[in-house]
Image (tube, rainbow, N blue to C red; front, side, top):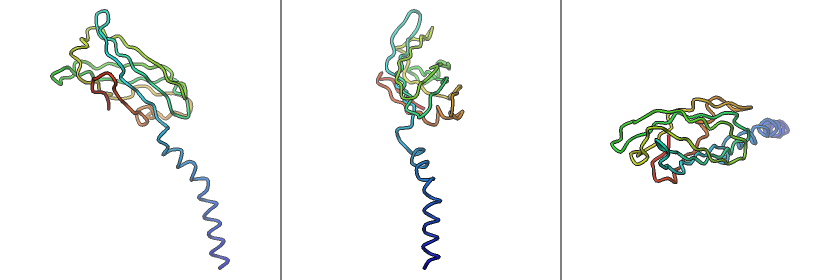
Length: 144
């Protein structure tokens, strides 16, 4: 009986430190959200506006994503890398990118092909892509 009680206490002590870590890694709040907010004609091209929020526990010093733009026929029109620069933890910001030679009216879909840059204290190289949540309030299909 005493051996069973000792094993129960020992098991509880070993498992206790693991529970908070497991809960943190599974937390739905730990993500980077990227919203394709608008596409607007700009001088000589198309301006893409994104709302990005870093809901990770650590800042991201630099985040850049390779994006594929599809035309109305579903054909890849262009691959481009968009650099969102620094993403402070707990901060939401707006980023705009002017893409020369792109006709906004012909863009049907934007696909995140890869994370080309993701650096920062405590940030794993694939963290930006693994923790990414996308949405579009622009009316254009957007995601991974």
